[in-house]
Length: 338
Image (tube, rainbow, N blue to C red; front, side):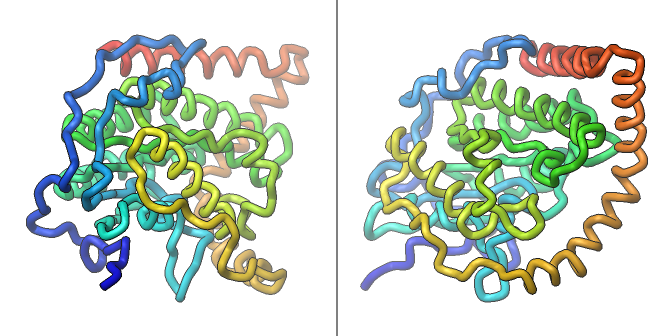
């Protein structure tokens, strides 16, 4: 009898009271690697970490995979049978060898901040005892007036440290800035770009520290291909989610951690038409804009005002860039130096 390669851990996201023991062929990794102290100017890339340093599910064994994060990992933009599917579930199907399965738990929630991941999602993920854990979050932090790169760094470091200590192999990604994706005018886009660059620098540093499987999703090849994006211009469509899943599968296979077939690249669903896109903008899109307007817009207007003042006095963006760099350097020094 052919077995479904993916099983949902529990209905409505509940973690089983007891998790099974290690999968056959699974060898726990030997513990955290020595922790370097990167600088803001040269945050290390996860690509420099030795690919054999971490172990995971063996070629013959069931896989426990948990996704933490926000709407990207929840699957927004890839709707199948009335529910979100997304890259993480597509990836889960290609992790085990023939005859085995993936037990997949998706804890990601639309709108989640790094604090939500640290305080709400991470404890449930640890109870699941995963072999693999994706931690992809940060864009929502950049869209809040309360953005604090030092606080975000502490949240992500805590989550990654706890999952790493529990033996999970981490999956991380750097992300494009939302201002660019939304096509905002420069005075509004630059502050968001500054924030997202800082978030990505923190993610790169933590990915190196914990030898994560890291996927670059901020590159032009990703951000400039509109075929990958849904109507809201902030979430991937089905093609985009498949591209993310394929990217992670390739990196996992290089480490000997993915043994099934990679996700198909071509969508199985027709792309949303103009009517569907207009419906989203008139309903969910309007609601999103109103929520963000109450929270982000006043702060974003203040940031844009600062941009315009610096351009008007001839100093340009340099002072604001330097301030953001100093905040990032302090955040990395505090987090990576502990």
